[in-house]
Picture 1 (spheres, rainbow, N blue to C red):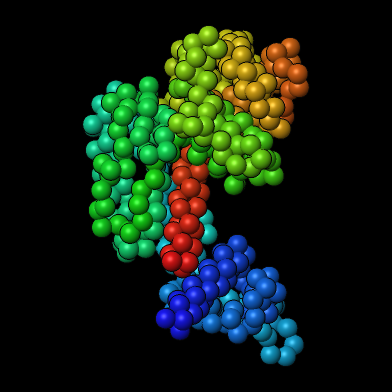
Picture 2 (cartoon, rainbow, N blue to C red):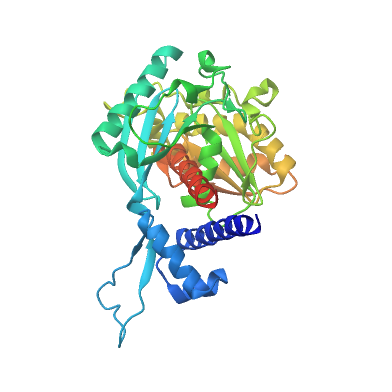
Length: 379
């Protein structure tokens, strides 16, 4: 009995050591065996055995040296996490558009697609479009479906811990566990995660956007609706039921109808959005356009002031549909916040464009892969 227990303990220890090495390589690659041993505190033979096991599973490979990298003498072997060992899918589906991104395990985008959506589309028809769009996109860009390890879909609405949606934008999806309606279609082994779109937007800003070095961030998703997401000490704050930051639900704050200020009645070129036309007119100092942007600032300022007073963020990031008018909006918003708050946080525009939510979906899918890989190694 003792030998059996000891064997079980040794197996568990080996799995733990392998997990530690995988985490170190996933965090930073390439590394030599000596570097891995120093970082993990494991012996070199233990590290070597873990690397061999991970290589056998296709998760780790030997790094090749680039031009000009070769030192004198025999170089130490270096190993890397194989970002090509799998892929993830990030999707943003809203009222007017669907954005799909396919990325490798290092976050590099391999394929991108944007589709316009009829805003009058029913919930069931929108679900069918989402399902068919994901399948067609993966058919075109991920022919080896088993390599898609996780998928994340950003939706306009609160998502609770069980994945159930509450949405005023797509009311037919309220009370629905959307992930259960997106069955496996031969593309991958990982499950689909559903998340609120503005929560994904703030994840994207901290990963690749305007908030990469900031812990306390409020991300304001603007456009056809206005809502907020936030991180505190670098961690996404979802709230008990996933509704943290949904200030657009409170009529007194005026955010729910703020997008009406961005209407632009003038004729615009084919393919140019209403907000882009408004931004072009504002850049040309059209007084009507400047007044529209000022009106929008007036409408969203009370809600942003409320969340600023609640969490005292270091940074506010404006993202979404209204960013084309951002250079006019930012100073106006700062002026409006000054008498409403104790301190006006720094305000920045997102550099991520229309991909912001989908990039956040990629980030969350990558986090899911990491959790599943490491838990699989430790089990």
